Length: 147
Image (cartoon, rainbow, N blue to C red; front, side, top):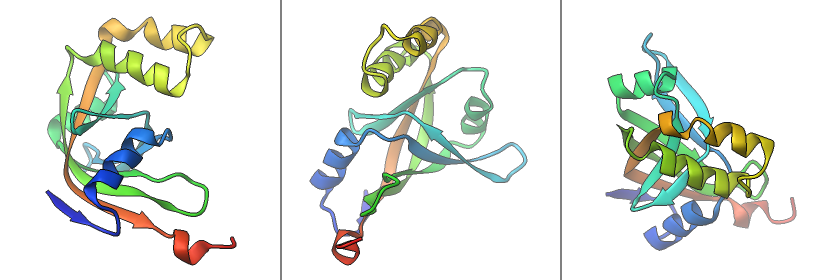
C-alpha cells in the first residue's frame, strides 16, 4: 500500500480509530461528476466501514464505480489527519451490525430518539467497506502553533 506524509502507518491507524468526526467520501455520480458526502465511519479489520440505505444514490454510485477517495480531518486547527484512495464494496449481510457500532460511536447511546430511529432500519441497512489503496497523512501542527 502506498503511504505518503509525515505519519507512520501505526499513527495513521490510531488516528482513524480515535477520531470521531464524519469521513468525507468522494465518489462519482451517475452523471460522471464527482460528489463529496459526509458519513459516519469506523476503522475495523484494516478498512473503513460506513452504512447507508440500499436504495440510496450513494449505494448505486459505489456499485457502478467502486473507486473513491476519503478524508478524515477534523475541522478545527491545527489541521491533521488522513486522506486516501479506496475501493468500496457493499455488504448487505453486515449492514445492521455496522450501523449499531456507528450509533454507539457517534450517538453514544441506543436510547436516544435519533438512535432508535436509525436502529429501526438496521435490518435493511447496507455496509460500505472502504479498502484503502493509499494513505496520505497531513499534520500542520508545527506551522500552526499559536493560531
